[in-house]
Length: 278
Image 1 (spheres, rainbow, N blue to C red):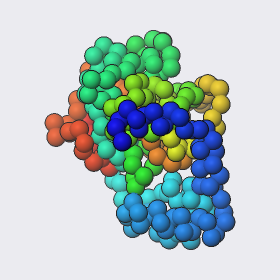
Image 2: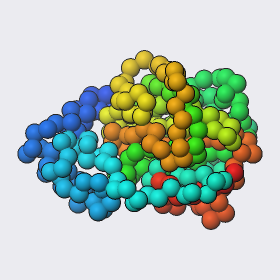
Image 3: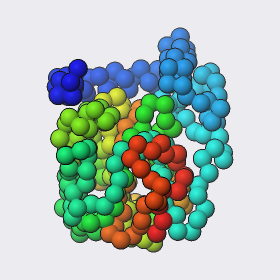
Image 4: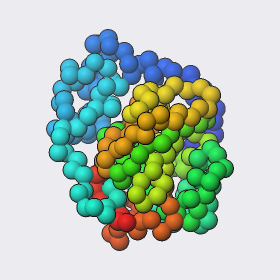
């Protein structure tokens, strides 16, 4: 199947209906459904359950609890350097670098804009012009909680409705403005290096996105939640999670950070590992 035909198939799929079905399946507590599903998924994707806080299928009430499983303490040490920027999640580094004014790279020959991704045209968005960004793809085998790359205060979270295209590399090369078209949540943080945005992008099988301070965010109209008491998050603190997998895009202001020289596209990242410095 070509990239174009694969994208066309996804356009024709009843995305919302499929996601509702997956939502219910992932949350069933019927033992003869969820236990074999968890065991099959773990074997098929070669998930290292030795890293998990609970290692047995019987320890999880639903498949979604298994999918969003916590890790054992110390499995993902957070880089302690005072000037370090850490990976916000496990996953594959798809793209990273410096924005060209307000544009960043989706795939070879395809770009998208800050305003389209963040869903607004504001002074806060302008702070990322000529800034730095990284796009991280979470495969099914990955740990699916998202953490903050640097200590800061959570100011607000904005839910932006959209499509549910797959976000793997093939779809990223075939669907223009993929990350701007898909459903997503933008978390706005204020850190000592300036403003930081962490974007949780939904996908075909993502039944919902959760944010630590709001809980699960259901699909619906666009909405913004402001944090009444500014929530202070230490570096590596949990920010949110995907209820089935997707992509994280993190944005920093111009000149605020520099990426590690060893960083390369296609790298396998582990949450908490250093990926840059102030």
